Image 1: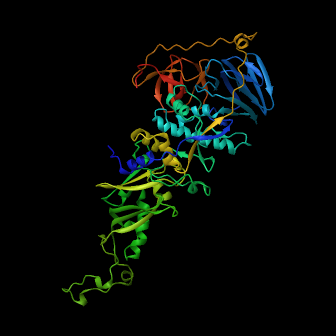
Image 2: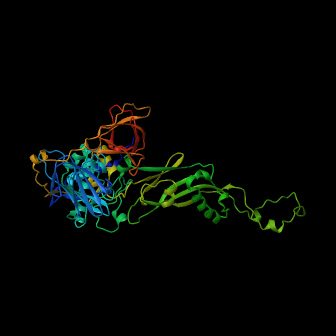
Length: 573
């Protein structure tokens, strides 16, 4: 078990003392963010379920209505139970207030998650683009449990809610004249839509409602990443010049303590039977040794160099000299080496039992050849330096990010030097793994976590001017007029067989009740659709591929995405 360090305890005590980090009132704003939806993967067609109160380009629709939108060139066509209309500009799904507190949003392409807000659809070159206009507090319900996990400690989730809210509102201000403020992916913040099961995240959003971070009177840019590797990064190292006075480079022992933080490692054994034991670093090390040994009068041929041990390993040369950065660019090794040394003429053995006339004179060919000793250990260790980026990182498979920003360290054991790589993301601002450890192990509050990661930032609570349009005439909506005869919903396929060894049973539950899930011939979204599966369909899983499952019924097999099904009760693990 990890021993609790003294530093966190002292920092926690210091953070308990000030009373200046209290939320103050900020300016009023609409509180709406515009999110480009990329995860539904719209092509030229979109299926929408109105699980709320909506008008579409001014036409009122009942709760539960299913509409299809199709793009042809720059024109959108909307289809509903035999009716259709077109729009050359955009189709707007406008949400209205509901008096009964029921869910109020749209489900896309049969997915389970709800998207609360107005949905604006446009077409370009036959493809649909969707932008959700959502109140930020409802938007966060689809962000917080995916940027963190709903099982995280509440105070960590609250810190995430504040950071995500601040980031979103800052982007909304900056992109006011752009077609959207944010994307629903890692270009900004991950947004999947709302699941009512994420109760902890919903509570975190509710208990921090309106709370944002400010610096010099303006919204801060609350960057965060999964793991900083043990030290927060300076934003200037990542994005260049800017006024980042509310952020600092700080050692973060909480991130390192968290066993869920991403770590990659490789071992270099201290004792070697020969150079081949150096593994992927063999050629690089022998190449460096060749130059060093030649300068010392030894044979530089790598075939005549043998490494028998690693005496010392350490990281050196910080990437940045303007700070105490722990990103190092060199791995320095001190090696035990055997080599062949050039023998001088006066070092040759002479036999006093023979007379000069007994020793034949060397031929011209023999006298021109160099005379090398047998392989012998060098009297002291030989130092070499290897570039961490990209040589060591690539050879030892230590890369975590696409950039060269991992914090790589050396830890010595009795038998080896362990090279460890940490940091998942840019490392600026809050570490989600660090916040998890702070709240879970040390019982830090949301405010303490935010103070640690954004030391120059103050908290204020903003108020919103946004209000939903008035509720639609419920009497009208509950009394449908003449409509086309609805197509009967297909019945579920029978499943009479039982799971075999290493198989288990699931049900299609994570979709809308009146939606469907595609059963595909291969585990990818471009594969042929074998069958459409409806809510409640039982399936037997024959192979778990992670994101996809291979499933069967009594008469068909195929692949479905894991996120749309749930194991049935008492299903085998």
